[in-house]
Length: 446
Image 1 (cartoon, one colour):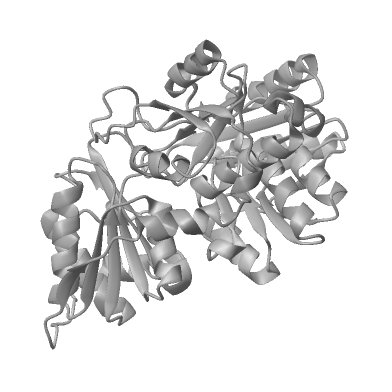
Image 2 (image 1 turned 30 degrees about the horizontal axis):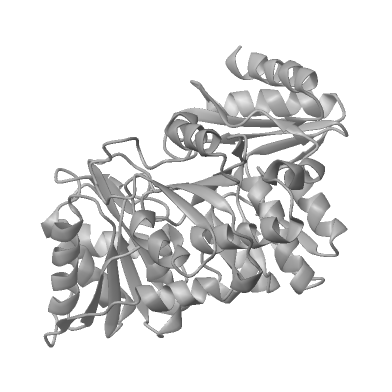
């Protein structure tokens, strides 16, 4: 086994060369041995290799003496729900999220849906498997089945007053992923008109990759919203834990702006509560949270950081620019579905178009993430920091390099997996954004 399939937050690789049934079986054994648990709940998405890998994983868990509870086809957030709601001590989701069809992977969590990352157990599990140090089991476990989809849907709907929803018309692009199975059952209980795009479960992704953060993957959604006169559109990734919105004009809405809208709704019900956001998000996120009487808390990019800070601060909600949204009353786990339902409630209460709801919340313009391949990341980061420190900027290094001026700011971060620097710039006008983006890129690429 190539140990490189063990990433910072999950296991991920190409099937069957990098991740196959034998490896899944051994990882299942090591997972039980490391955690010392007697039950593990397992779900899988619609990827073609999912049944084979999930089956092997379940057998490995049982071979190590634990009960392996098979949820079958599910979304990642449904898996987290099952772990939290029913008190399972651990769970594993078989998914490669938004990666291409040839990939698959494993997302792992402990009790209360607490994520297992490289620093909290994933490296230990890796070493047990790669080093052949999995202890022999003293007894045989078993495999059982459970369906929790209905209970998860009721849980998600419990975050809103469904009777307060207006009969909105919306287009949903499931990308042939798990949202295609879940959304029809959700909207059977709501007064909204649901127009489906690519709801057929198909792990070959025949229409487009299930990665809605890439502009080319939401073109069909934008066109269908404009064609049908819908109030809004939504796109989910493959395992349906992330989601992005487009407004009634088909204009893409970043995850940070959805964070603002969800925070608005939750803070009106929970005055003074803390909300965590990652440092790539727009300045409007902390400004809006503070304006509503909430307590904005800035954190590094990544779900393990966001969730840990939320628990420590008892934060009601957390959001990231990448379309991940976390809820205290969902065991601090992410749920694209709950975030989407909350925005529908907000839009119903506002009784005006989504673009009009967002306009006062979003006075800035942003570059989006711009990647630059560089030879010496450290040297370039030092050069950029020196240049802007001399210019009088406020600088911090919480996650990469954040440089702030009164009327514009940027963050420059190194990729975890590639020789890339990722730049995000925000300014007060289009002209200023173009000028400042070009200015920073000239240093990075010069």
